[in-house]
Image 1 (cartoon, rainbow, N blue to C red):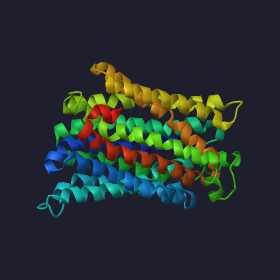
Image 2: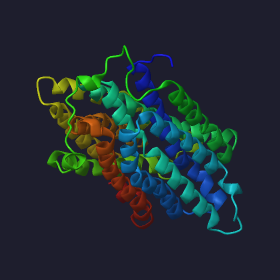
Image 3: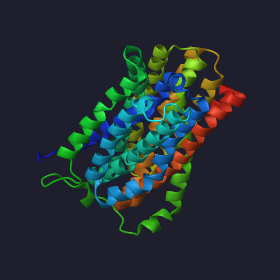
Length: 388
């Protein structure tokens, strides 16, 4: 196998994060055409969105355990192949058995998106273990931020790309086309990647402060528990943007299907810009202090700004001001991602994948609350209440 370095590994992690968000977000754009085509209501579509998060939550810890025990290469490689399969099946749901029943499309979509959630559960916890294996401690904030930059690129690409494909072809073919990157990057990972740096490549694990304590003792740590608890709010806001932003722009702010896709990408483009800055500041602010000092400062600043800006966007009567506030809200939220994951890696050492998975499970619980509550709040109180 050809020798590869940490830059190539980080590039593949960025690619996985990109594909992950591209394939989980595409349905929120396609929903505008899928609902009338398949006879689905907004409540049902919200339940389908939630099915992804249920699978995503249930398999976080098993995926993290697999990443720690059998290694990131096999765990991520098989997972990404399954992403592609589920995306192809999403586009074929209108041909699935039982179309005579009004509930069949809903049940098939619920199941397919649930399995996609199971497969995508490996993305970030196992990615955190890759960062631990390959990257020196003083660079992990920036390394994690590069992975989450891929998240923003995927989310920014999904709306304009999916809306463009739906206009040019149709929504079923759009899913088939978007499955291709998953198969390509999975093949590259399985052929070229390795669990740890090879001979001749410095191994950061030999330099790091990894802990040999039992996993259960780490999970009982007050700092780990507070980290997980605070990540719940991140999940609520993040998945609000992931699944409902496009529909909000079309239905409330009056954008067309194609224009709405373009506008929905702008907040994630802001995230692309601010995410690596958050990682850089995490590393820089920790110099001369504890490793958690920079993380705390970036998280507190990013989350406070994101919440205030989301409130401002909801109450803005001017479309341009609303879009600007939404862009900055997502940007500050994404800037706070890297410090969370760098903190989990620092606190857990060789158990990075598992502890990161526990933290991410907490965030997903917030996301499940978001995807479930938003359509109910919209139906009974309107979008203003749902966003504020």
